[in-house]
Image 1 (tube, rainbow, N blue to C red):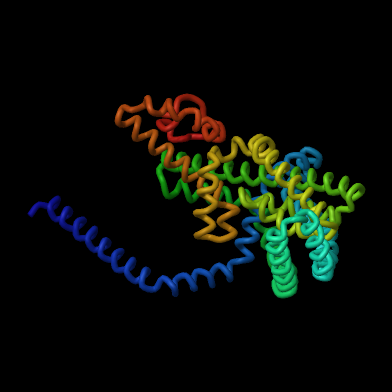
Image 2: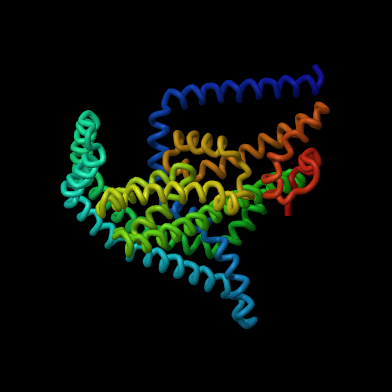
Length: 411
């Protein structure tokens, strides 16, 4: 046999061996999926400080890069090498100072409101029952149903506050203190070495792949970074504006209608608004319960305000701040949240939208490439309007097929 025949047989045998090995590995992985899952969760627990520090460092790298240029322009030439360290230190001080201010305002009100809510539930529910009875005067059937529902709700609220709410708050505060203590050092070192890590990653990329492929992968990573930074930056700004609007409304209603806990309610509404789609509803429930302490009429006013505020946020403010970050329609946003929440829980809710935006963009480009290959480029024109936001986020111009052909080489 010729040498080429032997090589062909060798490669075929090698392919068959690796295929069989992968099949066996997959069989045992499926068989021991429970053990693999517990081992993976254990590993995540061990690496929790690294993961939390990495996430915080990623979110803070943008303000670090922004301030570093400004600080470097102010320092004399001989001290410019200290710019990075000073920038990281300043950003961390500002970050933890803001967190401290929020916690110092929120925690006392949270504790006081929780105790007040537990003690005031019977009286307020009686007042609410009397108000409902007066509103349904003359309709005994509805009054009976309403009174039964109110009694059941009162019992459930008291049990929930004593058995779930207080222990959860204590656990959150203890977990937060432990996490901060273990993450600070990791966060400082990650931010300090962010440029070194970027250079090392780039060097590994070009060492493993050809220049053309490495350029394409680097462009993909830049797009992913731009998508995540744009989404979370816009969402944080959006949530801060929503919280501020809620605070102004609560302050006005405090002087006119006796609304309680303006700061706490505004923080709850603003923080939960970071969660896409479901966040406003999650924040509205505890906030409405806090307002219910001052009376059922105030609670109804607050619920109406929240509905109006979320309509403004969803139709005007949110699109204005996030239009160029993900380029997904409402259906795909809801789909991504549902999908990733099922796989990763609360973390999936937070990151599902930008992750799915990247996946969606990859599929879109593959479809465009396939249509171009089969001579159906006219179908690309029909979908060009829906691609505009994504292409602007890429920094690309021109026809979709031209962008695919360029391999998304972005600077």
